[in-house]
Length: 256
Image 1 (spheres, rainbow, N blue to C red):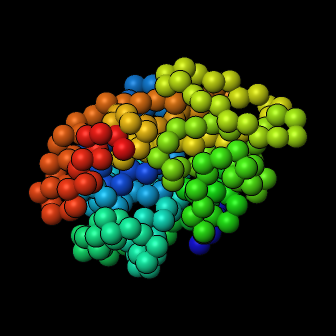
Image 2 (image 1 turned 90 degrees about the vertical axis):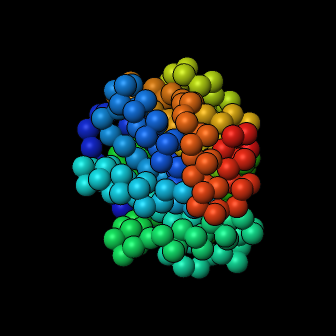
């Protein structure tokens, strides 16, 4: 399954990516989004990998999916089903092998059912890039963002994968980067195309250990990036107790 197309009316949409089995961060972001008035959720993949609670996270996400949340598959989700490990570093491979040992048939069936992309109205959701999503390309430059935006069928595209918050927009004949300030709403002009990189809920890598997600007010066309403090020490202790590489615990504490 590679793509899905759905539609829904104007809503406040919480977009969460790269949860990576971090239950504490996921719960904190969901609670924050509820306080911000979110009435729809989209999960951009990499629900598992690295963290110590893959089963609990997938159970929570499956419940949301049953209530109408949109979910796409990430590369770590794909790896948990088999394959892809040859392209991973040692720590990622060890986490993947451990995650596979934790998943039951219900979790594997859920991951296997997920599309790579979802398109609704003027919004497009993908884990990596709309340009060849199955190749899991990173978007870290304006040129890579331009390829993603050119391949997207929508005016506003949401992606994850890189664990950094960023926003790209079209202007004239080029694509430009904009550095968002957490908590400050950004109006998305209808005359431009946009690509929002949602950051990571469960393993931020920008020097800030607070979880990240974005909220899009579809009616007002306002996008807000958020950082949410959570109990990262508990999440780190769980990683060590599970026998996962200790570096994964250190990354949560340092946000790197």
